[in-house]
Length: 227
Length: 201
Image (cartoon, rainbow over all chains, first blue to last red; front, side, top):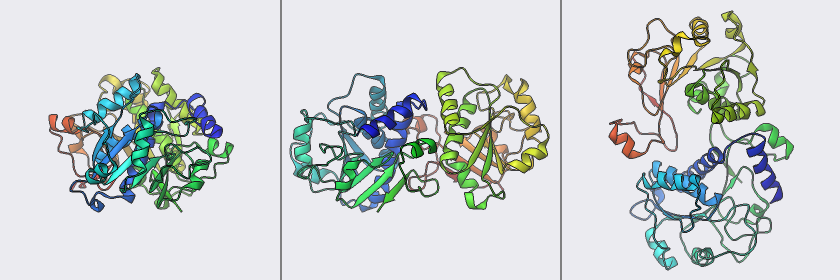
């Protein structure tokens, strides 16, 4: 977890990337990975409806970017974003989604069965690699419901609620994991069908410094499916 | 950034090293060139940048830092001997002047750069508007790019474009903007963010 945070810090302070830049590339990777694993034609719901659940931090921001690109890729995303931070970055991303006619739910679906009926996929953009400690409401109950849905769940970077290094055997078990920048230790505990790598912005020098040993991305793709 | 590799896929390049010269002007078009260069580096090309007049805009300065920290070399001058450029690089990305440029063309260092680019033999990829062209009327003895990447939507001068490939990169435009300006964009394949328009006859 510390290494992931150190890499992030270096990208911002040494390389002078802005959070906006990397978040845009990260969110685009997530949408692209989803489009490869769950193409719109594969949905059994009448529309390729996707529920994107966004947490209170950067992982939630990644989710908002992802939702916007999913819309451009032909999906019908709906966002649940109960704790939008009071910062221009997140307010801007919210506006961009709203102006793309992406609905924001006023409350979270009460039951897993309702989610299964309305959506063909759920994107878990609740907590990322900085997550530590106890899960605060409303996310505790949300995760409880998500653990019971039967439609696939795609988690951004870390399955929410998991310990970033050790995982969580009795927690959310997503069908897809999109690791950003590099897979985190928790990814070793991932048992779903699809593991993608995204966030193709790591400078070669940084990759070497932290010995990330990233496999090569194909051509100009922004995602790579890992074995 | 995605259209240059599509037009010139790595295995097809004539030189042994996948070298590309990215020429960046002083304003937004140049900044886009910086971002393009960075992604070319990630895609395993070997970009070199010529950016003689750096913008004071903090965002664009950060783009410059990002390129420098990616070990992308910045030329201190552009050779006037065209053969040197022809020999060293596979292609040139023209990010000198965009749609916003009006008086820019006549001012240094753009005028000298464009005079050199007019005579190179390797392909030119122009970002948004071939530099030096009038954004509506088109070329009058200016550079002749091989590839044009229209940003958001093609500009009027694109009608005069006679090169090999014309790409549009505008998938990010919200639908209400597309409708408001009656852009009628083409369908983008899959998750691609650029689409090739029909080649000019």
